[in-house]
Image 1 (cartoon, rainbow, N blue to C red):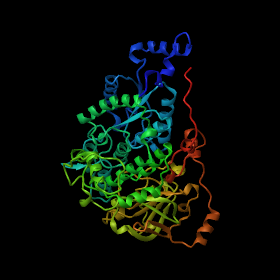
Image 2: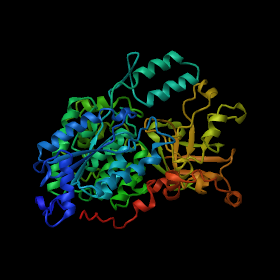
Image 3: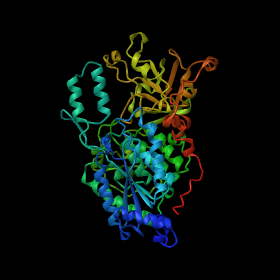
Image 4: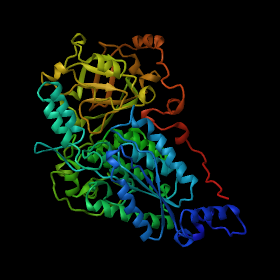
Length: 565
């Protein structure tokens, strides 16, 4: 256990007045803030990194929660300092908050490194915020705990429970098919998001906060608590207390984020029927923790972990139901019954609704819900959430219909002359990490005239991502992406493509000599960004199978603490 003289903040404040003008200056400026010596000297100084903003509904309650964290820090004998950091709003930020995940991770790392902080409470929950904060904390490697924003309350639409994203896509398709009206959309719009908090489906937000808990970066049970439940207030206070103890015992991310922890987090994602985006984010976090994690690791895990959480978009229930059924502690207790699924010792926890949280004997499926595909169309891998797809499409061969970018897709998808049929394979390219920042374009819209015929799923392939709240036979994250010359760039309309999920194959059924001839005439797309952060992003972003981190952030190397004196 540390002594006060061993605290990191002591290097800023602890020297004698006669020995260091810098320490004098630091202390005098604290007095200028109205802080007495007794309040902070010799105590852990805790950063509360708050992603609250006025345009992020997922985090609109985090101002209040920060006060509860602050109370917990003070009660435990620490000194709290709240600092605002960038908010990544999945709803509003364009072209995609995926572009800015690494920017928030850099901000987190550098704030923790450059200020006199002994520990940090990371507050977030909207999709990219969770991995960004944990990536930055892992790189800074000072004690840190994550406070999940929590899911919003279940939506309500004319007496039915509805879930953010998932039921929006369903009703929107009905609208495009001519079986739903403007009034239907308006009623759904007013009832689908009823409270602060992130999506209450098992989208990327709920998946990543649950993964953070499985990694050991939160208090047990923290990820499942609805944002407005009083238990969420208490969790925030207790997180503030816990971080002070973590500082005294030097419990850094390096001691938590082990290979075993990442394997447990991956198993948790599969048992939850979680978002495909989790694979990218966990690989990126692992890279910061100096843990080698690959798509093959995920696929091996998926084959031996059952799907236990009956939550939309793949299941029936919502996160509020999951919490009342026992939450993540109950699911982990069931998962621990599967031989080899978890490394951590999990205490027994009751399940209060065994239709929401299944046992291994009553699992929704014997394998996890995400498969990693390879083949000549995806040499470095692609992913599909096959539990959210029409089973008839999991082994399918059909002719490609190719769209060069999202603007092309929007312009032409409803053109009858394309002759898109239910057997067609819709292909969207130039939407990967370098090509477009990897937005959530992967759930390509089915043509209106097919929706009107009752068609609700088709095979769709892209180098983009899709919302974790989405569903369908969507092959995503194709690597290498088309913008860097990956095979997706060489597909032409009419080419046959085979998807075989049981065999984990994605192939372009075209002679290699034909592909080679196309490659010889291929030219890369024009550079999108000539300056600024966009240029930095484009020049340093890695591919989806590598976590879409910046190469200079993921690589080994020293980042020494500053000398405060």
